[in-house]
Amino acid sequence: MDELGHLGWSDALARHFTTNFDSETIPGRIVAHHRDHYRMAWAGGVVSATVSGRLRHQADESGLPITGDFVAARIVGGAATIDAVLPRRTKFARAVGDLTRIDVAKGEQIVAANMDYVFIVTGADADFSVRRLERLLGAAWGSGAVPFVVLTKTDLGMAGPMIDQLAVEAPGVTVHPVSNATGEGIDALRVLIAPGQTALLVGSSGVGKSSLANRLLGTDRQATQITDINGRGRHTTTSRDLILLSGGGMVLDTPGIRAITQWQAEGLDDAFADIAELAQSCRFTDCRHENEPGCAVQAAIGAGTLGERRLRDFAKLNRELAWLERRGDKRAEAARRRHWRSIAVSQRRKRDR
Ligand SMILES: Nc1nc2c(ncn2[C@@H]2O[C@H](COP(=O)(O)OP(=O)(O)OP(=O)(O)O)[C@@H](O)[C@H]2O)c(=O)[nH]1
Ligand SMILES: [Zn+2]
Image 1: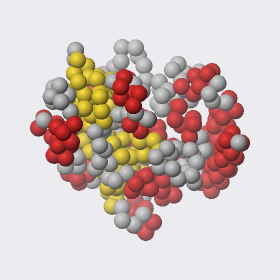
Image 2 (image 1 turned 90 degrees about the horizontal axis):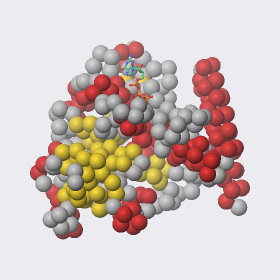
Image 3 (image 1 turned 45 degrees about the horizontal axis):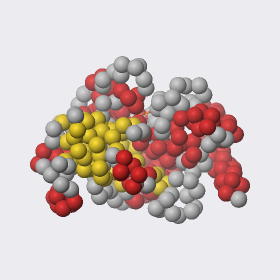
Image 4 (image 1 turned 60 degrees about the horizontal axis):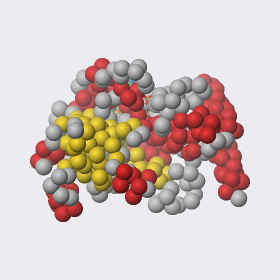
């Protein structure tokens, strides 16, 4: 089982595994996940994997495997069947629905497991705002992993006062200033992720997560990706979301987590949690839910499980935010978000009655 050591396999997991599973079963780690399709690394390499019928029926949503999970599986004909998810050491969760209703068991959706660090990535540019980081900081502290703020774009020369502000408003969190453009600060970050350790990347769109992953990897991951023969979106072309660094550390950067953590970063998850959740299953990560193929939001409207009104409201909010963003009016933007959140709460109350 030493073969899994580099993937973060621990003595505690090994003990759990030998006590609970027979010799036909092998341990593995989920390195990528899209809907029902998994990629699993094990001593014999990386194989595609599915969940066994028994696990599917036993488990509620939080019991199904997600990226970063260690699992017990059987290899049959070059593919894996996952029988069980091993105990999670840490988990990064998104609160689902009304955040004032604290119900951890039902109200959270786990998006990544067994990471040692959460890198909250944010750019030292005009978009910088500590307020926007607060939810991610909260989720990171709740994950059991150690949060860091990775402040990118230091080459723009604006980072100084932001580092000072973070020291005051996010005390206890170490800030790592980096530039993906010049490479400054990247080595320090790479060294931090020891062999067998995993860092999860979260943050809004455009803050530099892809650039950071490429820098840490030392090559352009996009360029090394396998092009899908169906010409589909990014989900299917990403060969793996758990990236192995040459130093032995790992970086977790997945399209699904991106979609969710971005909502979290923007503070929209509670207002449009239903759409955020559906959007995860859209074929394209940048789906606008208009008439793209494989759109899960449109499918839900077709099936009658999502009201057309919700999507209209959602589109309206996005247009408003885009417009306010162009104007650079942060206060008005925050006010609109609050407005829509209050509408969402009242809609939910009506529906619950
Ligand atoms: N000047 C500067 N630009 C950067 C830096 N990091 C990223 N960028 C630029 O910022 C833009 C967004 O970078 P990405 O790495 O695609 O950001 P992302 O967080 O992966 O964005 P999504 O894929 O939308 O989630 C690109 O144009 C990058 O070239 C940096 O350190 N300095
Ligand atoms: Zn869609």
